[in-house]
Image (cartoon, rainbow, N blue to C red; front, side):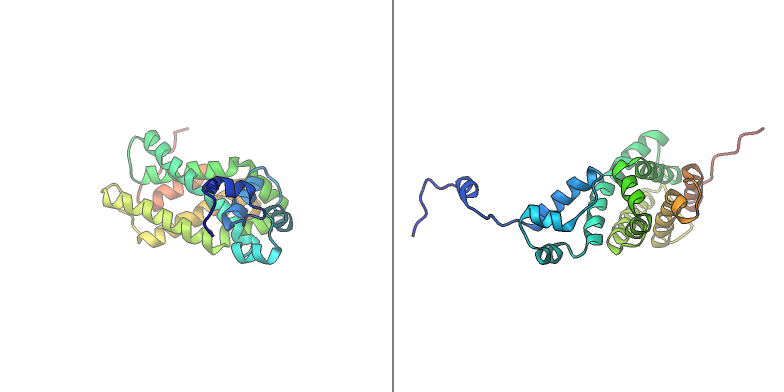
Length: 211
């Protein structure tokens, strides 16, 4: 039977009961709640979306993977902002630029209220998501590899290490200094991290001020 000509897609969407949800709906709702510093309850999310728990897990995999996707959705644009900021601040490219990109992202992590609340609620679980989840690690590694390769291709960087190795070291250094209070009970030391990053990237740290 032909569809009524007055039934537009919008009309059908507004009048059809039980419109099917999508995995993206789950992500959007979970991200919205996480950004409001709410603890994620997957049962509540499934109920609000209108799906059962089995469907939700089939869509997102695990709570850890869902959180990793949410955190990456915040981290990725922050990294792009860091590149713009660093280029304007250091008036150039190279090791200092790489260090400043890292400074910006590390500072953003420490100043993120949703992320800090997430860490405070369950430090061990949060640290596992942030530093051990394969999804996050692979995407951050690729992002830093691209960052470094771009600098090398433009002639601004001559790293003493292979790009892959340097990218991995930068990620680990970022994590070690930002989450040092959780790992070794020390306050985060971003300035020291940036000095070390500059050296690793083939640059020289700022000269010490004379007494």
